[in-house]
Length: 330
Image (cartoon, rainbow, N blue to C red; front, top):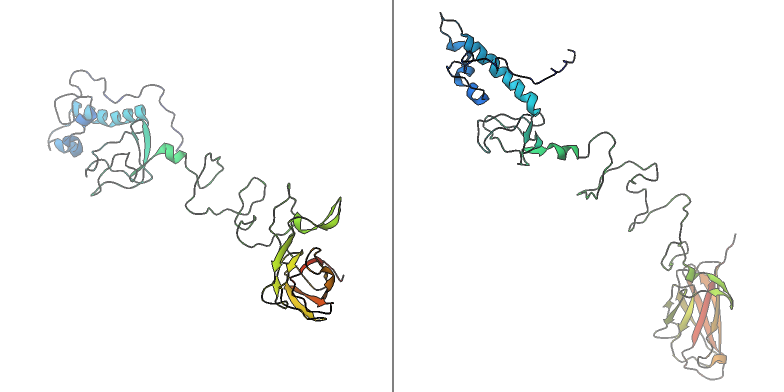
């Protein structure tokens, strides 16, 4: 069926300009322009009002044509039919979900639930039964491109495809997670230096304070790279210090003349192939009375040795300085 060209003018009902009583209410004797008056019980009965041997009257023909075409004239005027009914009362106009549109209070609404039969009609401001068309228009559609303004808070994470351009949202796993462990591939160029914690393993990123620095007074580890630890119980007790350099305050247990004491330094930054430099801190007791060396290095620890070079027992708590120099075999 081809598109019907709209009538160019004000649509008026059939017999709307009938004079006198040439048009009456269907099955009646009075004239009215009100649709409610014309939709009578006789109108619903139709031509049953005419006797078997009688003929329909001109007035009734005019009434039928007027009532039907007046409905069309009303639709031409308002465009969207106004909601009709009594809120919560069964027996009014039937409305159907997604198909019925009504005007109410200057707005347009679409039905969300069916009404009719034993289901009561509800006024359009009832959000269970109706949704304002403006709200529907302003919703996110299932298809097509839209620009969405404002802050949207989701009750659950939206699912998005992997981003292919710089302005697209990223799917979980495409970006660097703030709390979980991830393997990051490719070359990453930072506009400013990332801040990293003090490393505890040989393959972790190292901060500026944990690297060899060249300054005006020499080459060595920078501020923040060192640490201290105090030995407990005896001179053979293991200590733990996960720093590339630092100071160890030994226990003051007695060390006999010519005796040697060894202890392990647990250090997660140490590895096979590394060199540990060790000496006593100047200013601690009997600086010239001891010899120090590192007789062994392995992954995660190294051994320190102290020897009493005097002819008598000593009960000092010497402070030892150490520095790990990383090595390589290839």
